Image (cartoon, rainbow, N blue to C red; front, side, top):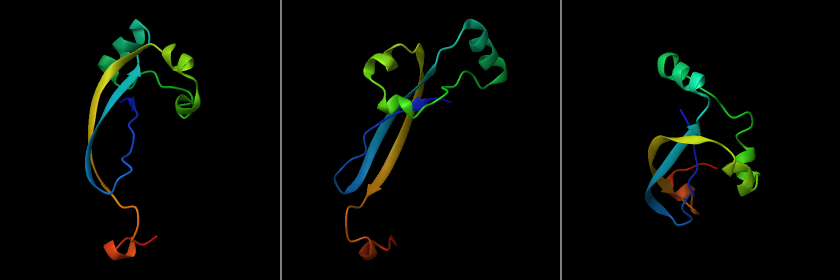
Length: 86
């Protein structure tokens, strides 16, 4: 489990994205517990990461958690033409 961020494309069509993820590192006890029992430390308020300044985010001790591969279809107009009800 982890957190990730990627920009969504602003052009119509099919897009392949890779979102790199990370998780809080935690103490050595928390890492040992995560290895054997799962889970691990979580952020108390994840939405603040997008609104906080860069200085706040860089104070976190993190580790890589893998990548999520996404395939997105983006529509910007003519939703009914493509069978999408809005």
